[in-house]
Image: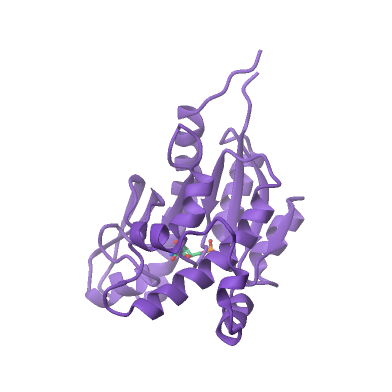
Length: 245
Ligand code: GAR
């Protein structure tokens, strides 16, 4: 019997990619099952989609955690005991430490405090692969190293709304459209210590007509994402196929 790939998912919003993955699992198009859906924002439609599909959900409220970090005097008292600031600042490629050390340190520490809460949820599940499906937070090496523990290497996948390495960041379709590109696309890649810099697993492209609006570009892009993400998860499942007798 072929064991299904156990997939954890993180979202921040509408969850149309999550829905595409749920549907692909349900219809047997991919050898995977979703074991949880976590979100950094409460009350989003993606959480409803997960619940409707019978998937366990949780919320780690990043906005509240970061606001709390700004208030508290002794931020270090909230940090996990196994956090080594020099190690994590040295590894990460998310913020410029030289430019503003204090700001960079606050950014990393506040994210690690939130990430520890994510890990507390995630570690209660048996999971082979973590899929970021519209999760709008960067992840520090503290988190990444605690997920990529297996000898098999990368275990965190992300989908980005542009043809990387062009247009990394938070608004891939907007940046593609405003640049005047005639081809747009989406990319599924593994997460590394930079922002949208990890190894590419798959890409899909689409044409942008002169009369297309930003909304048209987003719509065309999402249609491609819904095909691409399940295909990349299946590629991962095939490469890790576990046969139990
Ligand atoms: C998607 O377009 C995805 O590529 C993008 O957010 C949207 C989520 O839509 N992700 C990022 O920008 C990650 N940096 P969805 O919630 O409907 O799946």
